[in-house]
Length: 175
Image 1 (cartoon, rainbow, N blue to C red):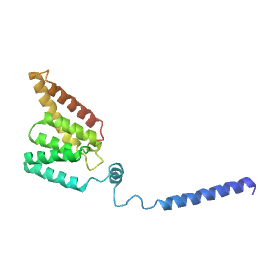
Image 2: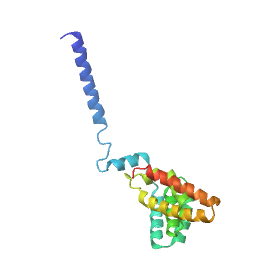
Image 3: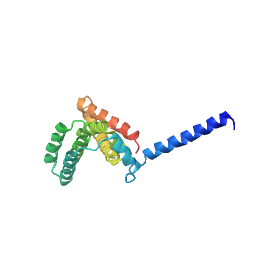
Image 4: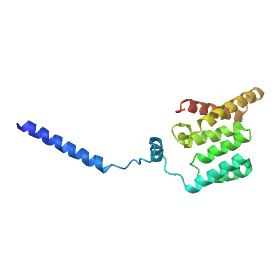
Protein backbone atom coordinates (compact mmCIF):
# COMPACT_ATOMS: atom_id res chain seq x y z
CA UNK A 1 0.00 0.00 0.00
CA UNK A 2 1.41 3.31 -1.04
CA UNK A 3 0.88 6.72 0.57
CA UNK A 4 -2.11 7.63 -1.71
CA UNK A 5 -4.01 4.50 -0.65
CA UNK A 6 -3.38 5.29 3.02
CA UNK A 7 -4.64 8.88 2.63
CA UNK A 8 -7.75 7.71 0.73
CA UNK A 9 -8.51 5.08 3.37
CA UNK A 10 -8.09 7.61 6.18
CA UNK A 11 -10.40 10.09 4.37
CA UNK A 12 -13.09 7.43 3.94
CA UNK A 13 -12.88 6.48 7.62
CA UNK A 14 -13.16 10.15 8.66
CA UNK A 15 -16.20 10.65 6.38
CA UNK A 16 -17.94 7.56 7.76
CA UNK A 17 -17.34 8.62 11.35
CA UNK A 18 -18.54 12.17 10.65
CA UNK A 19 -21.70 10.85 8.94
CA UNK A 20 -22.49 8.55 11.86
CA UNK A 21 -22.06 11.40 14.35
CA UNK A 22 -24.29 13.76 12.34
CA UNK A 23 -27.01 11.18 11.79
CA UNK A 24 -27.08 10.06 15.41
CA UNK A 25 -27.19 13.71 16.53
CA UNK A 26 -30.33 14.39 14.49
CA UNK A 27 -32.21 11.19 15.24
CA UNK A 28 -35.67 11.75 16.69
CA UNK A 29 -36.03 15.34 15.52
CA UNK A 30 -38.84 14.56 13.09
CA UNK A 31 -41.71 13.41 15.26
CA UNK A 32 -42.89 10.00 14.05
CA UNK A 33 -46.37 10.73 15.40
CA UNK A 34 -46.90 13.46 12.78
CA UNK A 35 -47.48 13.13 9.07
CA UNK A 36 -45.18 14.86 6.61
CA UNK A 37 -47.74 17.59 5.86
CA UNK A 38 -48.27 18.29 9.57
CA UNK A 39 -44.51 18.62 10.12
CA UNK A 40 -44.23 21.01 7.18
CA UNK A 41 -47.19 23.07 8.39
CA UNK A 42 -45.70 23.22 11.87
CA UNK A 43 -42.39 24.43 10.49
CA UNK A 44 -43.92 27.19 8.38
CA UNK A 45 -46.68 28.38 10.71
CA UNK A 46 -46.19 28.42 14.46
CA UNK A 47 -49.01 27.13 16.61
CA UNK A 48 -51.86 29.62 16.76
CA UNK A 49 -52.85 31.20 19.99
CA UNK A 50 -55.13 28.82 21.90
CA UNK A 51 -57.40 31.73 22.82
CA UNK A 52 -57.84 32.63 19.16
CA UNK A 53 -58.42 29.01 18.21
CA UNK A 54 -61.14 28.68 20.84
CA UNK A 55 -62.79 31.89 19.65
CA UNK A 56 -62.64 30.75 16.02
CA UNK A 57 -64.34 27.48 16.94
CA UNK A 58 -67.02 29.36 18.86
CA UNK A 59 -67.62 31.66 15.89
CA UNK A 60 -67.89 28.64 13.57
CA UNK A 61 -70.49 27.16 15.88
CA UNK A 62 -72.41 30.45 15.93
CA UNK A 63 -72.38 30.60 12.13
CA UNK A 64 -73.66 27.03 11.91
CA UNK A 65 -76.38 27.85 14.45
CA UNK A 66 -77.44 30.91 12.44
CA UNK A 67 -76.63 33.63 14.98
CA UNK A 68 -74.75 35.70 12.45
CA UNK A 69 -74.95 39.04 14.27
CA UNK A 70 -73.14 37.74 17.34
CA UNK A 71 -70.64 35.90 15.14
CA UNK A 72 -69.95 39.11 13.21
CA UNK A 73 -69.33 41.11 16.39
CA UNK A 74 -66.92 38.48 17.69
CA UNK A 75 -65.15 38.30 14.31
CA UNK A 76 -64.71 42.07 14.20
CA UNK A 77 -63.19 41.85 17.67
CA UNK A 78 -60.73 39.24 16.39
CA UNK A 79 -59.79 41.60 13.54
CA UNK A 80 -58.62 44.06 16.16
CA UNK A 81 -56.73 41.49 18.23
CA UNK A 82 -55.14 39.55 15.36
CA UNK A 83 -54.87 41.76 12.27
CA UNK A 84 -52.40 39.45 10.51
CA UNK A 85 -54.31 36.18 10.87
CA UNK A 86 -56.41 34.80 8.03
CA UNK A 87 -58.89 32.89 10.21
CA UNK A 88 -61.10 35.83 11.17
CA UNK A 89 -61.20 37.03 7.55
CA UNK A 90 -62.23 33.57 6.36
CA UNK A 91 -65.01 33.48 8.95
CA UNK A 92 -66.23 36.95 7.95
CA UNK A 93 -66.45 35.69 4.38
CA UNK A 94 -68.43 32.70 5.65
CA UNK A 95 -70.81 35.06 7.44
CA UNK A 96 -71.41 37.03 4.25
CA UNK A 97 -71.95 33.83 2.28
CA UNK A 98 -74.44 32.64 4.89
CA UNK A 99 -76.28 35.95 4.44
CA UNK A 100 -76.33 35.36 0.66
CA UNK A 101 -73.98 38.29 0.02
CA UNK A 102 -71.17 36.75 -2.06
CA UNK A 103 -70.01 40.15 -3.36
CA UNK A 104 -69.17 41.25 0.19
CA UNK A 105 -67.49 37.92 0.89
CA UNK A 106 -64.95 38.24 -1.94
CA UNK A 107 -62.66 40.87 -0.35
CA UNK A 108 -62.71 38.96 2.95
CA UNK A 109 -61.78 35.69 1.28
CA UNK A 110 -59.08 37.45 -0.74
CA UNK A 111 -57.49 38.89 2.41
CA UNK A 112 -57.73 35.52 4.15
CA UNK A 113 -55.94 33.78 1.28
CA UNK A 114 -53.33 36.52 1.12
CA UNK A 115 -52.66 36.24 4.86
CA UNK A 116 -52.58 32.45 4.85
CA UNK A 117 -52.07 30.69 1.49
CA UNK A 118 -52.61 27.32 3.15
CA UNK A 119 -56.35 27.84 2.68
CA UNK A 120 -55.74 26.82 -0.94
CA UNK A 121 -53.24 24.02 -0.27
CA UNK A 122 -54.97 20.66 -0.40
CA UNK A 123 -52.18 19.07 1.63
CA UNK A 124 -52.92 21.08 4.77
CA UNK A 125 -55.66 20.84 7.35
CA UNK A 126 -56.68 24.44 6.58
CA UNK A 127 -57.79 23.66 2.99
CA UNK A 128 -60.86 25.69 1.98
CA UNK A 129 -60.52 25.46 -1.82
CA UNK A 130 -63.84 23.78 -2.58
CA UNK A 131 -65.80 26.27 -0.50
CA UNK A 132 -63.96 29.17 -2.11
CA UNK A 133 -64.58 27.79 -5.60
CA UNK A 134 -68.34 27.71 -4.94
CA UNK A 135 -68.24 31.21 -3.44
CA UNK A 136 -66.37 32.59 -6.46
CA UNK A 137 -68.81 31.04 -8.91
CA UNK A 138 -71.78 32.49 -7.00
CA UNK A 139 -70.10 35.89 -6.84
CA UNK A 140 -69.30 35.89 -10.55
CA UNK A 141 -72.90 35.10 -11.46
CA UNK A 142 -74.07 37.93 -9.19
CA UNK A 143 -71.47 40.26 -10.64
CA UNK A 144 -72.63 39.54 -14.20
CA UNK A 145 -76.20 40.43 -13.27
CA UNK A 146 -75.11 43.59 -11.47
CA UNK A 147 -72.84 44.62 -14.37
CA UNK A 148 -75.84 44.50 -16.75
CA UNK A 149 -77.77 46.84 -14.46
CA UNK A 150 -74.98 49.29 -13.64
CA UNK A 151 -71.69 48.71 -15.53
CA UNK A 152 -69.89 51.71 -13.99
CA UNK A 153 -70.37 50.85 -10.31
CA UNK A 154 -66.96 50.91 -8.61
CA UNK A 155 -67.92 48.41 -5.89
CA UNK A 156 -69.00 45.85 -8.50
CA UNK A 157 -65.78 46.36 -10.45
CA UNK A 158 -63.77 45.89 -7.24
CA UNK A 159 -65.73 42.73 -6.39
CA UNK A 160 -65.11 41.40 -9.89
CA UNK A 161 -61.36 41.99 -9.48
CA UNK A 162 -61.40 40.13 -6.16
CA UNK A 163 -63.40 37.24 -7.65
CA UNK A 164 -61.05 36.93 -10.63
CA UNK A 165 -58.06 37.10 -8.30
CA UNK A 166 -59.44 34.26 -6.18
CA UNK A 167 -60.31 32.29 -9.30
CA UNK A 168 -56.69 32.55 -10.50
CA UNK A 169 -55.36 31.61 -7.04
CA UNK A 170 -57.67 28.57 -6.89
CA UNK A 171 -56.64 27.49 -10.38
CA UNK A 172 -52.98 27.77 -9.46
CA UNK A 173 -53.29 26.07 -6.09
CA UNK A 174 -52.63 22.47 -5.22
CA UNK A 175 -56.28 21.52 -5.61
